Image 1: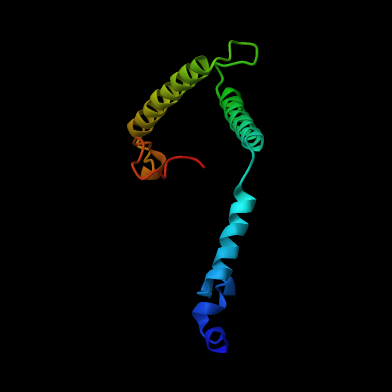
Image 2: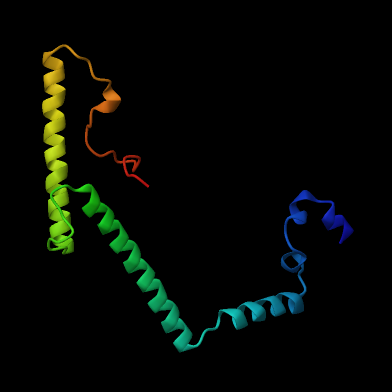
Length: 130
């Protein structure tokens, strides 16, 4: 074992994983099996909790969209379709306004840096906010 501990590769790997002893790896496998076996009720509870968290996250993001879109208000029908439709309409409006402003600047001889001109979505995903 001392020859293994001097090697830089084996110092980061726990001894259980480096041993070729079947008993040691068998115990490790059994420990994993015991801890990963859940009853059907536990699996169902975990699934329900995960699904509730997913729904909460979606709801929070839709709330954010509603707060950023001026033609949506809290008392209005908040169906996902309505939110997405009005948000898309607002984005289209902003694009049109942007084009008009760029053209007005060009007519006045004002140059606009290329990084401030929207040219559509990029295929590399870098245009998506995280």
